[in-house]
Length: 428
Image (cartoon, rainbow, N blue to C red; front, side):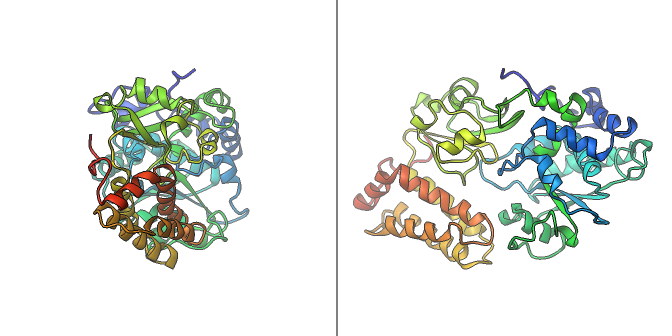
């Protein structure tokens, strides 16, 4: 059941990212099938709907349904690829850019055809130097081969792909901030509605999709949506890229069918915990997702509903494994420092709340905590949740809430004794 792969079908070589290498493994066959066989945009949408593909950016919304929300009868539509991968512990987009960027380019053209976008954008994180170079080289190859641009593959469909580098702001991973940044404005998130599907980039209906979501489209169009739907679980079809980091012997990028067991991934595929230590906790989907204890992953599978039932989220698929001996208050201090730094500052609960949380957690981690700190952290986190313009406030508050809930005794010990139960260790 779990041996199927969509991305991991080739060896990583020095030239696996090139057009020649991509074509040798079936690259652009899906695009040829669509454009030369006369498939209509509705046919592409129907195939993606049949696949059951859900967005891989974190929310997990059905891709075809998201496309269907685009306002009708607009003279202009835009497709935007959100490649502003900034969640610590998440690095799957980089893997695609560095090893198979044509997967994304072909997927972009297919999606653009499906939603009638003639100018599509890739918003890539500015720090991704190698990713950007590989993408631009691949895009140049695709233009030269007539796979992007005017009259693609001799058809009457034309589409340009414009690449824009972000400035490295975490908030620009939020779609409305990202669109503002492309428009040349400050990357502030916007209140919704209107949603981008109605009024997005340059006021036109816009669909924002994740890198992995778009990159899987060539496989679906080449092999059929029904085939893709055979993989995964009843509600979560296909495979996913999982970036495993932290205290495991073999960290890295893995592709597994949705519904793969966490324990099998950690103890068999990743070789177990460093130093053969006991497992202390798992962050299941990027560092904003609530932390889980070992007993919660005992029979847990890697799919959206299963992880949600344990009170967390599959998120972006970035799994962080934490070994026994790690100091949880010190780990949370790293998290709160990141979110306090990355808050865009537009709304008060996020701007002030992330700063206060970081100040309190830092004080605890320095051995200067005092009575009432835990209760204040809980109160501030609660005040952030649901009261910010975008979801990034919640991303900052959820780790605080879950760490206090799961490991409250470590914070209480730190405050009472002025030192960590684990000597403040993050490394083991």
